[in-house]
Length: 100
Image: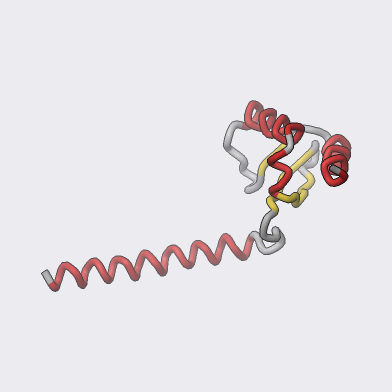
């Protein structure tokens, strides 16, 4: 019984080291995204925008998310959400959301 517990403890430590290394990799790549925000890629050249999570509550933004799901599904190779609209439309939408 004691040997089995030692094996479990060793496996737990190894798992924690592995997970903490992965978390460090993810956190160093997302340093430029503040807490409460997320990255989206918009337009023909996939310009990156960092926007507040609160935008998810707005129906106009939810419509964009539905378009993204229809066009790309859940596979977003850029690491962030790809939104299928022009940069101009996205900027005008986010400007309107900021005013409301």
